[in-house]
Length: 358
Image 1 (cartoon, rainbow, N blue to C red):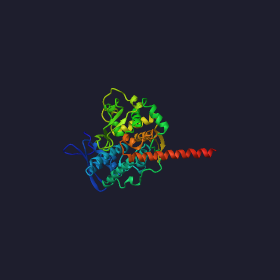
Image 2: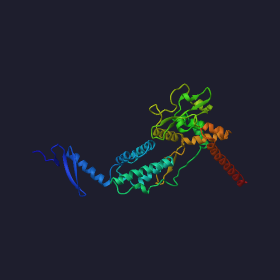
Image 3: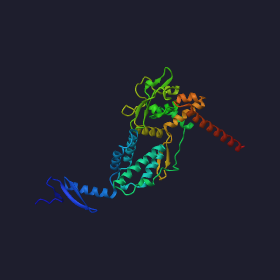
Image 4: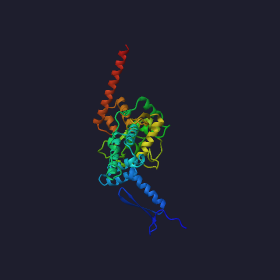
């Protein structure tokens, strides 16, 4: 005698179970009784803890992308992708402490304050959507704010010891040439990553800067050319240590991505962080939440500041330096003013130490 099925089998072959949950009749159907059981269990889990965060995030993104421009939409996509990797459970199981730890890790790893605030803003909007959809009752992000007093070192330029590391390890660590080029040219990250070997003019001793990569639109960069009226269109001196380091008789990009094209935003971050770890430029810090994480206080922009110091100490005036940097003299004058003040403070400290020892 055939065993009776656990659930009613409909004329179309599907098995069906009717349950009354919170006064509401809910039908669960599947091709087998086991599938029906799974759907019932999933429903109870969703009712108790809400849907999985990635599902809610995708739903919010689809709704939100109709309300913002292209640049903002691409930035949101990048943030949502990171958040979905970080939060994989149901929205009801994500606590304010979990969010606080995530934000603290971002800060400790050297993310810009604007990036951290944007990430927190996106999280807040996704959980607000979850509240409206009935997944949760309270938005867990409302009690979370960027950390204050996080042990994080920020430097505008490298120390002498760090600069020596960049100079001496460029051929021993992957991406070392990238760091050396920034130190000896002061290029912006997007300018350096857009360089081809054809831009290296050894005959005239210059590097032609006529394009840049714009990462403001998300993970994939856009190649943009400087116009002749912009300060960015310029020739930068090719210093001998750098000329000796750059391979000759090559074609294509100086710093291609894994696929041979332009490096994507995430690939740059991972490659730079690996370089900092192997070069000894990374630091270990403890977050507000008590976690020990690796921090990356040295950014590509720090090397641009270091080159400004080199120009200052070499005796270049503001207009000469501005032309190399692709900035206005007013911007470089502000940088030089800070350098002068730093030198004055250093001199005062030395005099104070001297007279204190007498």
